[in-house]
Length: 386
View (cartoon, helix red, strand yellow):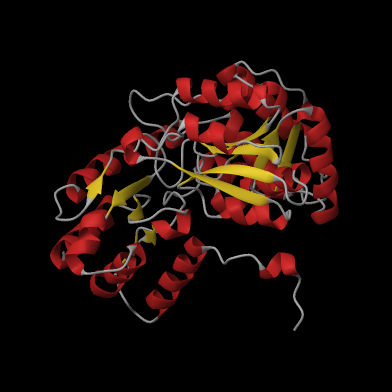
């Protein structure tokens, strides 16, 4: 079978592959605890579900404009005005079928063949693969846990050349849990401005930051050439609703909209209305979710750091722990973190994700988007086999 080079060059998503593996094992009757999933375990808040029911009852089931409804865009516009002082017009906003779709729109619109996009590792698994779909080249810069996984500015300067087109940022960061400091963001945006580069800033985890930590919106410092990527999946536990959005300069957003119009007619009409209410009428259920995440984070970090061969930094944001398992690999005679993940799954029935998936070595990502009871069981099981 002749498959295009563009598609043949892509790798499968390791996180989705792990989710599939867990589902298959559960169907076989195995008691698997998944710490690999990248979505909140809480149900979508009731006020959002009520909005979707209302949309159905009002027959809001037809095509919308391809770039999203004006009502949802108005709510997004107000959110960024109130929270960050950013003054976008509706023509600066594109609503898509999830943040991943918004990200792909932006990458495919900006990059030409052989352009370079700088990505910091550990990175979300889809970043380099999406760059490849544009026949461009991902340029990876490794971050250091001793610097809280924040980008090294000097390394960044050395990687920029005539082919560099954009810098892709992700803060709060999946998988490391890093939240970039204001100083780091200012330095990166200054470099981008000096070199006339675009920045794509994936801020889908912006709401999930912990005590005494502040999320800094990249567009505040470089509005003229930053495309913000965001959505409702993580903040409102709406991963399956598939609503994301991009905000940026009109000339780019309009071209992204043109591309989207040829790929999908419009985002889901009912989900758009529910997202509008999610953002505009945010209720206590959402805040309660973040409070529970912090309790789980504190518990899992404490447990893991008592285990032989595992070292974990306290994440400043997201619902992930990124653990250094170098010593465990040495203790057990393993080759890499893939072996650790296999060991946890086969011997403890606990699913995690290898850092190899995120462009990093000798780490394991664990999600605490699971009940505290399941997290306790998972820690007991891992502790027993170690």
